[in-house]
Length: 217
Image (cartoon, rainbow, N blue to C red; front, side, top):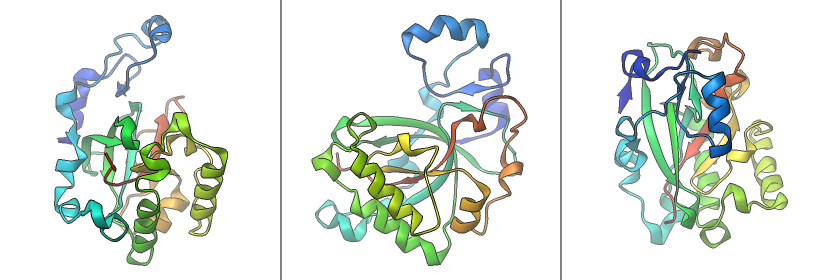
């Protein structure tokens, strides 16, 4: 679903943030004090990625995943959303990932069209990790060696996930949301400073570049 500020406005709290994920129970009472009016965006505002990107993913063949899997890069807000630039097309998405864990990753995201020179490398990343750990590559199940291997892969492309590595899971591969990385990945994106309002104290609103791909389950 394509979203505008008119869609998000009713769900913004007193600090101007729209929230995507519920907090753990023991934090809800603190949230009520620190973020008056805090609500979570309803699921009806989020389109499953299998529908949003079905044109690209309809050629996916699980028997030939290493050959047919496609990476869809997006710049995403995963937990809370600042005021967004209306010149950018924003989508409410929910992405099934994490192999057999079937995590439902919620986000407000804008699609990034990768440079031709890097697109094949991004596809190689998602193909390498399809069905990783026999379908159990998930943040709660990560080994240090898996993180190191992924960091080394990104480094060869001039990218990193120093801040965002905790998002690493099958079907969603994180890259830090920096201007350098946007410039390496795409020629079309607005300057990062113009994509959203970064003026309040929330550090980057958990913005992350994600390589989305079909999940093995």
